[in-house]
Structures are given as structure tokens and as C-alpha cells.
Length: 284
Length: 230
Image (cartoon, rainbow over all chains, first blue to last red; front, side, top):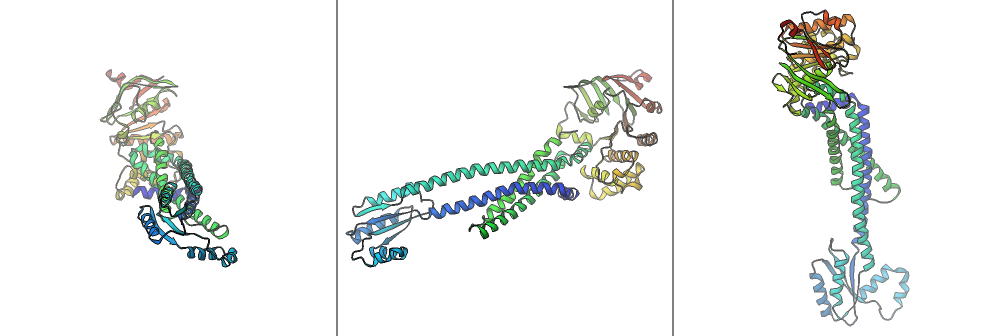
């Protein structure tokens, strides 16, 4: 109770200083917020691309339906496979006419349908990687009536290399940004605590316990961190709206991330205060 | 009460600040600690307040020994020892009342008792009329009185005052000394460090310790009784 009252009183006594500390925390967390926004949208984009990873098994024209059913059954039973769809020659032609209207006339005048029948193998999320698509293709290619199995190996390899690079750089940059934010938060709160060193001195002088002295500063640090977090959230949201309205469509970060960000701001604030005040607790 | 036994204090750059100092301040005594600048007065006060630890020897303050007390328990000593400085060290931007109430609050006085106790302390130092004034609006003498009221807040058994009149004119100095004698008359020991020998001479009933280059060279009690600690 005392800690909370003192923390609020400290804000009132030095609104400019504590406001500046919160603003510095806010700007530090804004960098983290913008980075999260970019990372999240990059992740969404990669996931969207990943969803297009599939194996197309082209079948010879003379393949019998019973043979096709056998292959379809084996592929469907694979744990990594979500769905296998059969596309007949007629369906393939129909789809070509719809999806490639610029070649419409070419498809009208033909006497023999040149497009093969095929099986389109859709994979489960988490299984859309080079290793799985290769195994699915190899399974299909064991059947003599299978002409070919395509999955764009190079493309899949590149996508997953990009995923790995993305994950590594996200981790490294995320840690770097978080560290920079922690340093800025620490400095801002150290300035705020330095301004109140007289109070700490008097408290030590008259025999206040260290835990008692520390408490209001921890609360103050957490409040400054939380206020900074709210400011960062507002600025990140404004940036999101701006990009959405004037540049391109992007998605807003999930609520869970927002809550983690706010809690991290409060935790950073409290922890930075605890570190900053330690030095003052040995003076006198 | 307060007992220094063969206390030495050495600082890495400054060298010996105190050398083999021993004395015993008994309950309810009034004593001056004199000596020129750099003689070790402030170091002695800091050691009694346990703001510092001796390099050698032992400082005992009521039951607490500098040899065994942990950093964590120092607050227990500080509540038993009131401290007043030459430069007051009040919290600027707060009133006289708030400065005193702050101490009561941070040392755990129940909220319901803080107001009346802070007012009583200010009245004890003759500042009940100035309770609502910001300390920076008060005169030097008045500020020192607020500092004394603050030092008395925990009801200590001894009041340490390090050059408390150094920044005051003669009239304010007399007022502060009168206040110290009043406090002492109620049973609280007072140990006042001062370089002002003229002031010491004006109070012949007080005990006097004199330091020179970190050594205790005079203890009026030892001279009078021939059985002192020095």
C-alpha cells in the first residue's frame, strides 16, 4: 500500500522526469513493437507460401482406376498427408481453361486432351518440408503408371532456407532489440532514482529496511515500464494503421504478443529499478 | 551504550583516519567530540552510526557490535541512533511536517499515529507554527530544528550531531544547543562533534573528547576521575 502510494506520489512530484522516463521506455519498446509487427507479418507471408507446398503426381493415360485407387489409398494413409485429390484429364483441361484464359483458344481447338490425369497431394501443416515432399514423391514414383512427381524441389529448399534465416535473424535481432530496450529503460530509471537519492539517503539514515526502501521504486519502475509499454503499443498501432491505409495490407499482431509486450515492459521497469537502486542501498 | 575499543580506521587513499581510539559514552551523557578539521570527528560519528566499519577494533552500540552485525541488520542500529548533520539533509520541496512524517512512515509507525507524533516532535523543537512551511523557506536554525525533530522520530537513545552549528549564526547556535540540553535532560545521550572550542568552553558540564590526527588525546572524564577509557 505504502509502496503504491509513494510510487504514485513520485510521479506527481516529478511528472516531467517520470514522464520522460516513461517516454524513453516507450520509444525503446516501440522498436521492439515495430520489429514484432514486421516479424509477425513475415511469418504470415511465409506460412501462406508454405501452404502452397504440395506434390503433384502425374499419371500415365493408360493407368487403370483400380491402380490409381491403390496409390491414392497409400498416399492418403501417410501421416504427413492431409488430403489427396484426383484430377482427371477433363478436370485438368477445364482448370487450364479457367486459370489460363489467355490460352483459351488453344484449349478449344484441340482434338486430343494433352493434359495428364494427376493426384494432388496436400500436406499437413508442419510437414511441408523438403524431406516429406521427397518421401511422398518417392512413394508415388515406385508405381509404374506414375509418369512424374513434381514438387519444385529447389523452390521448397529455398523456402525452408529462407525460413531458417528468418528464424535466426528474428532471434538475434529480437534479443539485440530487447537488450537495447533494457539498457535504455535501465538508464531512464537510473536517472529517475538518482533524482530521488536524497530520499533513499534519509530512509537509510533513519533505519528503514532495504526491502521497504526498494519497494516503491520497484512499483514506480513497473508503472513507468507499463506506461512506456502502453505508449509503444499506441505508436505501433498507429504505424500499423498508416502502413495498412497507405502502403500495403498487413496484419495486426496477436493479442497474446501485445500482453507479453506490456508485461515485459512492466517487468523490465521493475527489474531495471531493482538494479539501479542497489548501488544507493550501500551508501551512507 | 556506545563503546569504542581500540578502534582504527584506515582509508586506502587517505591513510589512517583514526588510530587506536577507545572511549565509552554512558547512558544520558552529554559530550562534545572536538578537534581540528581532519582529526577524525566525522569518521568517529560514521563508525558509531555504523555507516562504516572500523579497520581494527570494535564499535558497540547498545547490544550491536560492528564485528558481527550484518549489512541486513544495520537498520536496527540506525533506529537507536539519531543523526544530525551540518547541512541538515532535509528533503527539499517538502514541508517541515512532511519531513518528519516521512521518517515515521518509513520506519513503520502506524498511519493513525503519524500526524500527532510528527506534530509533537515539531512542537518539541519549537516549530509547531512552521509545520506547514516548505523547509527551503525556513531559516538555517529552523531547518536544523526540523532535522533534530526528524532525528528524534524513532525515539533513539543517543543523538549524534556532526558539526550541527557549522552553518548557523550565534543566535541559532545557542538555540540548537539549548535544545540539545533539553533533549539530554529527558535522558537521551548527546554526542556533538564540533571544531568550535569556544562553544565547548561555554558548556563546562559536558564531557569532552578531543581528537588529533586520528588519536584521542583528551577525555575530560578520564582527567577528572583518573579512570576513563582513553
